[in-house]
Image (cartoon, rainbow, N blue to C red; front, side, top):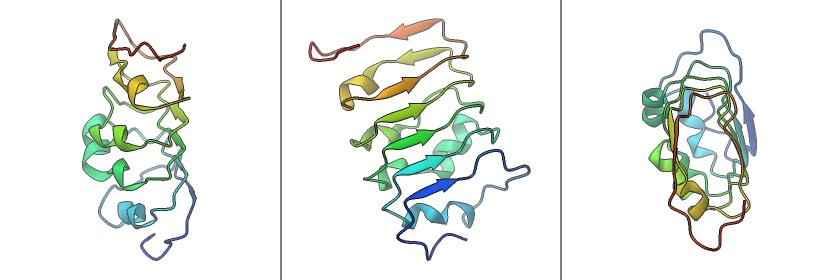
Length: 130
């Protein structure tokens, strides 16, 4: 669907009912200029997210909204996004959260509200500011 939109900088797929995840849907990965992705309220779980979305392809990604899904942990491909400044993970299923993401990203606004977090795993550099 999105394969020819190479200059696309923002995509909002939030709250689309009965969205079918397949190779056609995620072909927007060819849009390497994407700066903003909204995948909120899609009933995504960690497996679907890791299988269909390789966030490391988006070197310019600044804003990512994954709120109101069923995500339990971050996809590994996310840590390669050095320009990410906003990450909304609210209203998901996180029970624990490793703060290593703070070590990888400068000036990140992170929303973890309304999760089930029982444990924060810290691995903090001295340079990190809260």
